[in-house]
Image (tube, rainbow, N blue to C red):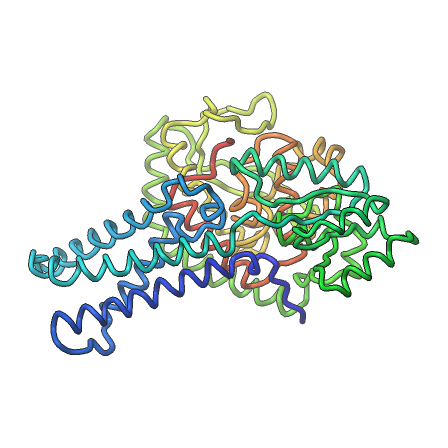
Length: 449
């Protein structure tokens, strides 16, 4: 069984920084403990608690975000570290208050202040080094593509520039006829080649010679996976489903059964833990306008079969009498209570029942309404391939792209769904769960940009 992890390669520096932060916490704690109390601290639950708290809070405020590291230095990335320190201090004070132990000034001055200062300094130094070492835009990728493929990729890169405010992946385009001159560029990091351009072309020998000399090469679809974290639907070859690598999430396979076990365990625990919150939300919806608490919709499920989902009602009654439509920014149909329920995804909790019954999964493409899909299928190539996966509560598209409210947004969502179709595995699901927690905690991703 081949495990594909293209999403992990670009995040290795971030994981290294998280590990460095945890080690810095333990070392700083040990050093200050030695200087303050005259002995080494040994194994202290408090030190490990600080390490876990620092890493978790750093992730939630965005210190381990790839996009954050690629922003210009004038961005307030240092303030994120200060925020983590302040949150940890609040947590320590709250812990002391709960256990009726006041946080004395001498303890703060003599231990916590130097301990957290050392940790913050070590973490900021690692971040600054990582920015210079791993995320400098100094070398280009050369993309050898057809004219049609170039138009698609230029559109993708433009979308990223608009979203992140800068060029995330420096690259240049050329055809096979221009290859010889382009390979002379000494700043090239690698070459991504479209398979369709290589068929019986004399430049093939030139490419082999460049690879023998040490230049990195990649297929175009692998380059999209590594650098865009998605596969544009126009560039996806359906034949890959038959002969390509990946695509391990198929009915009857071990991965399929393991995912189903995780769905049963996870949805059961979530329903148990969230039941008090769900009851309060139901009461608020009922008190809001006296209307029904739940709202049901028909969605497209696995292999195109229809399924019925139930959500907490967040819109005014009879808000879709004119037919299904996408929800725009500041949708006037959404109630005041419904806006808060949507912001923190509480309205989605009843769908956990669909996960228990097997119609949905915790992680997978979001199911869409058939009435909206009718026009999408004609406008976007390979759209129906997303139906090869069981629909989910959250997914790679939901954590990587804002709320979609148009065909263009749906196309972008599909590019992430195709990525997930090819690379789905337990580790990617765990990453999506973490990113979902981060989005829900920040109340983001529920409105169109």
